[in-house]
Amino acid sequence: MESVIDILVDSNVILRRLHRSHRQHGYARDAIAKMNKEGYRICITSQNLIEVWAVATRPVEQNGLGLNASQAERILLRVEASAFRLPDSDDVHAEWRRLVVLHGVCGKKAHDARLVAAMHVHRVTHILTFNVDDFARFPDVVVLDPARI
Image 1 (cartoon, rainbow, N blue to C red):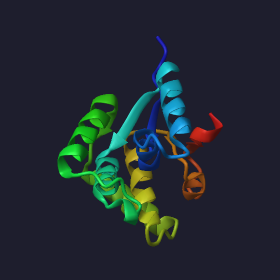
Image 2: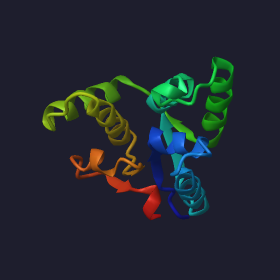
Image 3: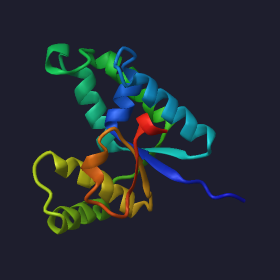
Image 4: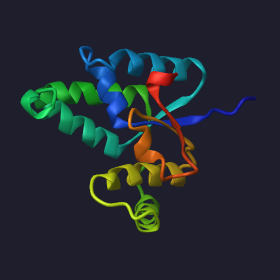
């Protein structure tokens, strides 16, 4: 029996997949479809869901989608139904603390480190993201760019 490879999908890919008029929508849609077809298990974290909610409900003039809470809820339900959510735990927090200190992570990049912490705890080695450079500091993470799949 073949083993399933888990892949964490970054929030930017989820958002591009949802935003049909975005120039990267096709890349996100096609990459996720290909990963599903090839037997990858699409994974997300609670952090992804929070980030998707924040962008979905932020005004368009502030780089958001301008949706109301009811519309954002429908989006989250679709995302949750199509992916496996990696559980949060104290182990994720401890690993995040270790990573930010080890790699000197500062500012907004701390969010990326938390995704990597969840990946480590749940033994996920691959991430699908448009922000390839943001994960370069983590040598054990296989970073896949949807535009190159």
